[in-house]
Length: 252
Ligand code: G
Ligand code: G
Ligand code: MN
Ligand code: NA
Image (cartoon, rainbow, N blue to C red; front, side, top):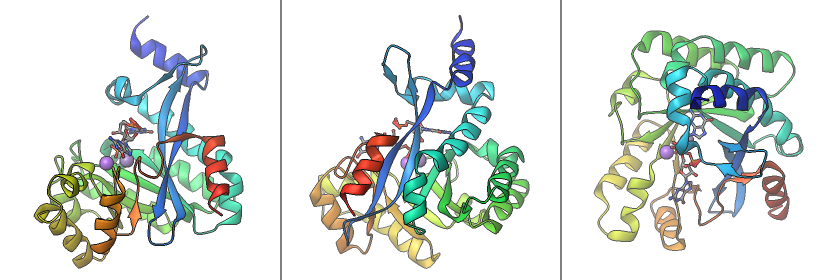
């Protein structure tokens, strides 16, 4: 069978599930949110990384049913957390094409109509792929924002958008890529590009999340630069839902 056929079946069988990586407020040590990241859990227990299948999902439009499953899974997996912390926010990844289509938007509206507090959801739009129809994209983003959904720019500075996504889209949160956070290890006193991104986010009145924080040294250097929302292996790798909920409880 082709990868496409196997993935189609895996979605139907609910073998593609969300793992959750905590987003910390490093200033307080509290978990303020999570990013949902898909994993392929094979019946034999093997866990397959999205690096091996996300491109195929994107090419075949199977990314759409997968994303809707993720959107439905998040409120269930994290029910107890959403209920006890109204400020907790979970993000999921969209490819630009999904912002140009109405489908995702409509599902979030259904979720809101079902009573779920959609201000506890955020979407990450990657800059790795081109966005063609900015006008339509903006209409859909406005519908999401009307439901309180936060819009995050993912992989900022690494892809197609350059500053144009920032200029053209109504972004709330800038996710600073690991590429730039890494410079805090290589040359901690000389990180001009990282510093420029932090400054730009400040000027544009955007929140910042630093990704790929692997060392305490990086976390401290980011705090010194006024960036307190951190995500990375230093705090935790992405965890299965039950483990994530236990991790969250242990930090309360
Ligand atoms: O979780 P990490 O482990 O290996 O993810 C690898 C890549 O797959 C990242 O670029 C991440 O953004 C992407 N990815 C993970 N889950 C999803 C998802 O649900 N949708 C999309 N579009 N990309 C995802
Ligand atoms: O592309 P995106 O930012 O959506 O995906 C995040 C990717 O980064 C996922 O593959 C996730 O597993 C990975 N990741 C998260 N934290 C770290 C980290 O501290 N170090 C490294 N190398 N990868 C990380
Ligand atoms: Mn992401
Ligand atoms: Na990223």
